[in-house]
Image 1 (cartoon, rainbow, N blue to C red):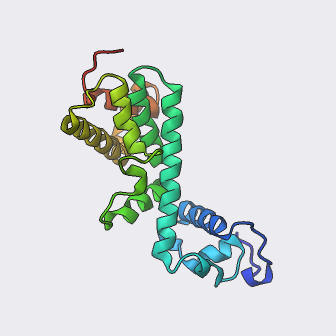
Image 2: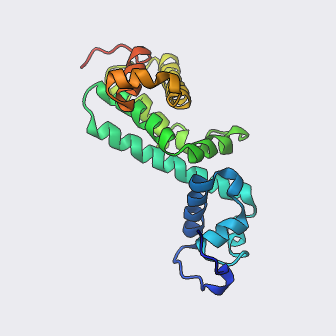
Length: 209
């Protein structure tokens, strides 16, 4: 049960109000779902006054954009760690596994990440070309590292899109109960995810590894 004392009775003590509000919003989102999110509820969760969120967010949509940005940063970090821990062309599969596992572990946050981007004219900055921390570009660059032709721009972009869409679709379907027997046969969920990704044949042929 949450603290019954009102937020007004507790002095604000966070060093970074925006950070505290985003963290509180993510906790609420993952515990209770998007319907539980409001600026008032987030203020209560953060232990600040109901007016405090308006210093940083004009409305719930702006707060959700900030939460989505947090989610993209988490996903990017997860994929970077997965790549660093793998070798050779297994790095490509490791990126896909990290993506799907993140989506499965943070379903409400994952949904907000895409919902927040759906009506925007541009992709989230974390997926844009040239972003140093772009998970999307990490997939493309890993393909190049393992032999994809960087001058075949259209083919490379299509392969990157296909790989991203494949991981996205698998994230949506990996929880289906119909696949439990496959997970058991292969030794677990991660093994199942890896096997599906490897059978898709999405990655360009390479002359290395």
